[in-house]
Length: 126
Image 1 (cartoon, rainbow, N blue to C red):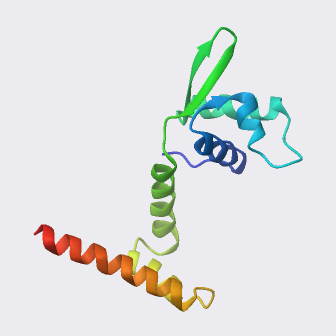
Image 2: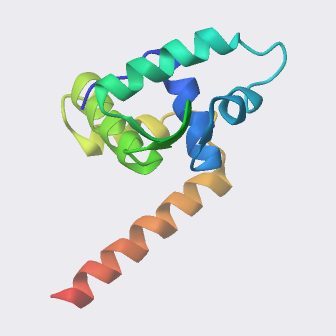
């Protein structure tokens, strides 16, 4: 899967938040000052070409919808980050968060709980 540019990702974030919509609906998702319709339209055309967005045509108006979910894209990006910055090691990736002083105790406990739940689930499946 290709990586999105910042502008492409912003358009996708807008589209993911509304699930599907017309150009005006996507533009309205942006904070003020909003980009020009022509700018967003150009980015949408690129995203269609890249296979991230498709559309239904109603006369001369297109209704756009994502072909890739936000979670699919996030998972792909996260895989790439683990590969590029942590030598493919999920353990090193997790260690990065435990060594980070910005992660508070409550968040570490939540992470621990999620991991324990997944361990228990996988053990019960065997």
